[in-house]
Amino acid sequence: MKTIKQIFSIILSAGVLAFAGPAAAQEAPDVFVKRISQEVIDIAKNDKEIQGGNQKRVLDLVETKILPYVDFQRMTALAAGRHWRDATPEQQKQLTNEFRSLLVYTYSGAIAQVKDQQVEFKPLRMEPADTEVEVRSSVVQARGGEPIQLNYRLEKVASGWKIYDVNVLGAWLVETYKGNFSAEISKNGFGGLIKTLAEKNKSLGARAVKPARS
Image (cartoon, rainbow, N blue to C red; front, side, top):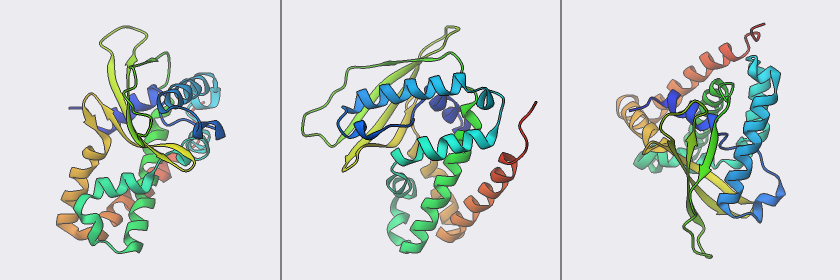
């Protein structure tokens, strides 16, 4: 089974969770994902600073072009599972913020790996009234090899479609974190999970501010 780091590398190689404009509210979910995938691939390929490992540049890209289109609260609640209901509103907010930061650093660490991949999309299975859908695709590597399954769960909100889970090779991202979260909460409580993520983010943040390689 792939590690979380490998999963993120695949996700970003495909250009998922990219930026979008107001048109996203009118787009079909598969059209939305297809368009933003190509946009992120183009940016990552052509930005010399990103390809050179400029972490500040990558972090800025993630913060401004990706995060507004991800439902972090729902993603965090799903990852926390049954423990979410037992947490206070402040704890829920803190965990969402820390999980958000963790995903930012993880995505940022993988985004420079985007090279020559392409994404092929499957026909969308959707009824006109559906507000939750799964967009299915596969990543085709430039040097051959088996295509990599890459699916997305999206929900329709007032502003358009938002992604709240990603599936790589049959493993949903939320489910992958859910096991880790549950183990930490059982051992050290909800506050312990928040503390663990905060310490992890502090370490990742220190690495991210290091100068890019020349």
